[in-house]
Length: 534
Image (cartoon, rainbow, N blue to C red; front, side, top):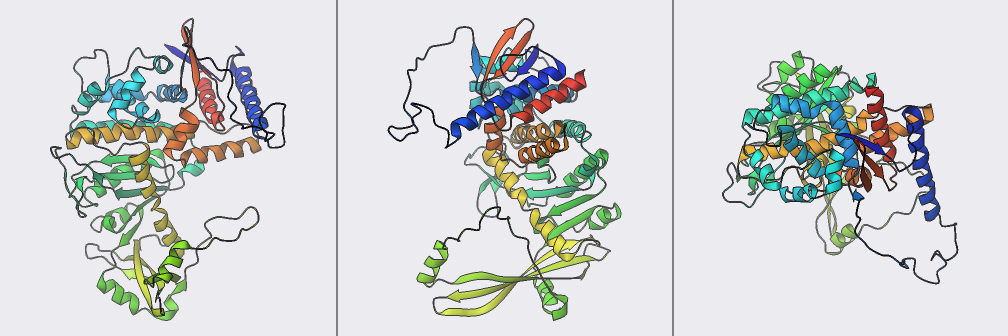
């Protein structure tokens, strides 16, 4: 079934004239809402005179629609058009063989059902029931029905480890199609981050759970991501008592291979102190892979740092977090520090930072690498005044011989953004949860649901900037905004778009009936798909 998407009822023109029609409608809606929000604009009886409340109410009558039906998630129809253009469903059905009979669902129906559930504010399997009972939602996807929660849980339990890895390979093949459309500067350097995160569960009969280092029962999945776009390259579920670095080298090699196939000219691996893969550093260095890993501040390293001469240390100056675009405002008082001083607690404050470097060869390596040292100069105070100066060391190991020591430190600090990614996968996408009862089935759920996060990045990357130079600047700004956007914000701006869904001849027409500041992103994607099909 063909699905056609229009911004509103109106023009039936095709091609560029149709593209111009929705642009004018979008701009008209934008002006209309701007006029309503303008404080200087007044109309009779608009409730803004102060004589009566703004929320006056109106003569509203509520009835059930007979022939028209609408959905709150019209943006998912655009996302499905992108999935069709990428031929993701066909690739899943071709590579993933889990069902003997397709009555009526295929493997791709199940996988996309998990992703679309997350894109429609679904937080658990039970929320799939809301989607399958939404007639307009089903019509927008061109589907007669979608799997129910029980069937979806059974599909998760059919996975073996090799099936999950096959599915991740399909996602890698798809992301290559998206990356191929990017400009040359996109392939300057791929920054691959690795991190582990704990997924707590109170279930007592769930296979594979164990107690972690901090006494939490659950799983300890490994997440490998591409910092350039925020995409999840791989997720590997592990038992709760496994160390963070277990299996990280193998997943890093797979991510390197994918980025090499895409055409990235340089590749950089980043990880905290738990991911210093000393056994693999020489191999990566010979393969021209740059790495920046944290190193544990062990006593021998601290002694060597203490023995460095004073001239080896340089002040570490960090750029301001933001630039004030208007007048600088007076800073508010620090409530927490005032309470600490009043109660005479010990207060530790950062005074300054110094950076130095030296050559260092890990025990498992044959080569010598740069060891960047950051010394944080601290001041300890209590209620009676300053106690004594103190300092702490942080170490970073790298084979990058061209960047300055400060640039290495900033690059290592940027890796902390993956903590935000893990938080999004937990609280936003709700991918790092445990709805089924085995380690592998929960792993399959994590991979299929995290596809929603990758679809967010692919949607932003697919609509290429076009038009005049000023329009391209605006479009690139919108593209970067969507890439860095939190998942819930993305759903609110681009997925939760009320739309009317009607049948016209052999087509299903999706008409958006509300305005959103980022709607042009969706229509650029649709325009790109139209041009490619023509």
